Length: 266
Length: 83
Image: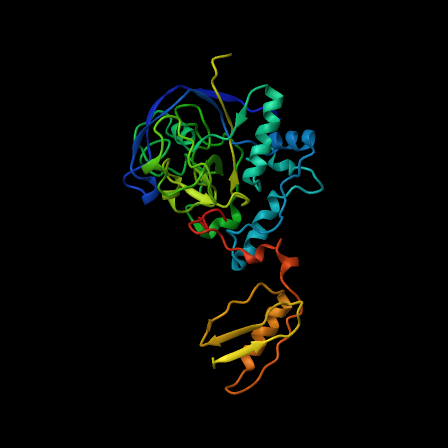
């Protein structure tokens, strides 16, 4: 089935939720109430096919192995190249068998370029979610649970890697394979890490805004959220977990979803 | 590593002298190219107390500034976990 080139969105109502966790890493503390205005979130991460529409129309570079990301150490290079190979677009063409998988091998800049293009297509300011919007969406109205579905690890709810020995036999899966959360959002844990708009700062929650926080104004690391198919530390699948990488990082485990603000128009 | 002095006289390299006491450079080198670095490492490996070594720094490192091997992941990056 061909995917709609324009993502489907679901409305997330304005409201307050508890962001962070007092049981997690230091940078998740303190848990604190945050208000986010209503917004629309794409129901799943942007797919290979959706990204392909953008790359073709905008003449934008397609996912490839370029300079190695800084998070890949020399010892990891052979493994990275091998695992990345199935995700590379050959001759400018998407890997057809992955059309409905989340797009990967995209940097933060690639994700924002997609947002700019989609903004023009739909006539709205499409953007990456803020970290607060992402966590609000992941929690899906549940209060304080570890994962988008509850507190217990559940292999039937997310694409992650319980057994690291099987890494070479696993990979991304088509979006929508796992049950959505209560807001009908898919892949809010696992499958691919998702770029968000915020710069990372460990103490962001101690000094941050409580109303529509947008994070630090600058930094050297960007936040990715949600865990991915390579995640075997289930702690990283938690709604509150904050992963952070240089913005020009790309990997077979990092993709993105997009949002736009609810400005009251239909 | 013995105390060691290394000098170059080529104006273009603008590297004059570094003194090494133990492994601690008293004057830090400016960036040099890859082959210059290899020359220095080789000299340090074969140096013996009292020896005089001449090391040629073939060029500066400017042409390599766009390369990423100068860089390390910024402190705090989640190295691993995504690959």
